[in-house]
Image (cartoon, rainbow, N blue to C red):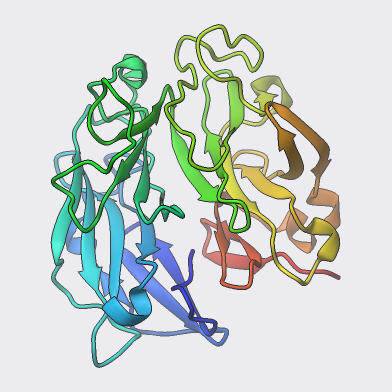
Length: 327
């Protein structure tokens, strides 16, 4: 779920089977914003296939550009550019403008699929290891990486990417960053990585990059002899199994939540908050489940979303969307 920059009346919700829906002033519109279901492989092939990401260009209000991440028949990951209709802001043009990124690799699982624009104006894209863990340490592969590209010139890499690697690599050693986000106040990059034995939160200070997060060499939460340690890790012995990265809360509805990073887990539906204090240090780690009305109604937490006011939303794969508000 996301919102277009400057648009305070609508939310856009991605459906894995290929549609993007519009919620306008709290009402779900009948007509999809975009429907690319014909491009999506049969969902029986793998439960991680489908339409996985949506991001609007920072200047969408004037240029109408937006981008989607989906799995193509055959297993290729595609980031394609589309345009909002000039005549109806609740509809997109049916045909893509261009393909800005293609990612090859084994057809298994761990595709990543999150996109966000950084303060530098470049598009950041998470790419999973696709089930072949060695690819995360292979700098010539785009799998198991955080990628960074210039949507205005996708054929050329932006300056500042990782030297000695594929031209689009920003950081590496990641298993499957299903969801990541930038803190809208600091520009710091928060990544929720679906680990092997541990679920991880990794944080990059604004505009640093070039980091090795260790997978698959390091996956213990503490042994970081190869790579950068996570700021937070959860052992699977605590029933957590699949990290869902979220957002740093910057809304006004809950003042005491300001600056807290919210993230979750697919298996337990646990929602946790923490405050990053620099390096690998965090404080005020808190399980929010007992404070939320949705504690017993969430079926399968799949994502978080953020609107232009900094409010944070929880997306349930069962078809529900919740906003985190004060009592």
